[in-house]
Length: 331
Image 1 (cartoon, rainbow, N blue to C red):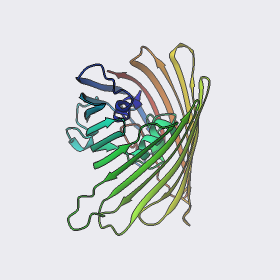
Image 2: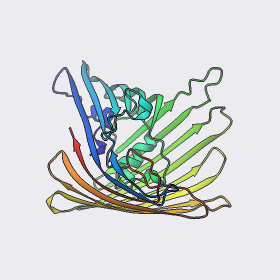
Image 3: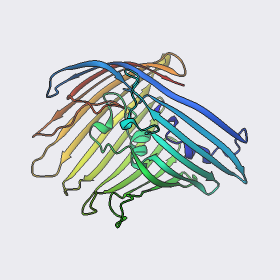
């Protein structure tokens, strides 16, 4: 359910014969439940969690057919906490997404605050939990989700191949490299198989150092079961290197039920060897096309001072064990 807004511009590329000259859609997610955490420095936590499976949001998507096969799309998306009503993303009005996109036969060109190609690969292809619940792959993998001040180009699909390139302007006076962000992905999809390669590079505020992540992902559908595998090589701004590996599956069961599980291994290549392993299991039950109940369990074993936490789609978490019980409605 979380994937329906991330590919909005890409969707426009393949739906140019749009029904009306222009349209406006109001959409969103209301997600809440019970969150239990153990293993945090301040002790156990029990609370009402918002956005555990998919971050709660309210969005507006508009589309206008400009003729000649060209479509203009805009997205304005706000994040909120359903338990308190407070705005997320540090109170930004449209802190989740704010973009304009022109799409046509040559592809899609967008500008604004957008999801990164690296995140879209992790969310849409690699992670059985779609970066939500206690099994969230971003508990361990790089957690850069969106970047401001970006220009992005997505090619049309050609023979199963699609490329996605994004440039984030640092907007620092005197040096365009400061806070600059670069990301790209290339994917191939044929039948049951999806292969995707993603890379990102982030400059620091002084342009004196950068971090980078490269990830290779494979997904294969075996009937009602989908297998997921991903491997990432990371280097932070201090030059420390690590590897992340994910194996998991999603199984579509009878009665609208779905089972998902994953194992993630983090290997620290530095002398400290701050390794970590995460195991997670989740299940959802569809009450309707738009509403489901879900439950998830995740546990991280940290070694040699590693400090990874079990979070959710909207919360980075504070403990090494998390349990989620909730309901999600998509409108």
